[in-house]
Length: 133
Image 1 (cartoon, helix red, strand yellow):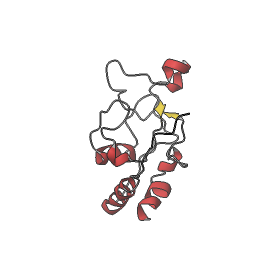
Image 2 (cartoon, helix red, strand yellow):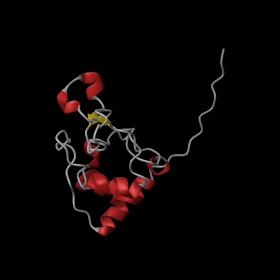
Image 3 (cartoon, helix red, strand yellow):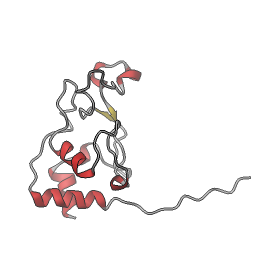
């Protein structure tokens, strides 16, 4: 519960990670890869809207502790590092989504609670093959 409060109230992760899938299904620039000589321009490829440069769809957080490496380019190896990057406001660039992504100061205990919450999002389910006609 403490981790949920950090996630939703203090860090405001629910700006983008909300709803049943913990995703707003929208596109945001978090700065990942924008420091490369030829960055992946993401959503801009389709929309041709400048503000979409470097924007990628918000992923679900279900099973997040089981899905390393992180971000669209796999550039972040651990959940802890990915969390730190996000709570520090992403990677600065011209198109960074500063409306939804702002740096937040967490205590060591709050960071631990947030990580415990994220790790609790692991789901256990079986997908069975449907009977075909």
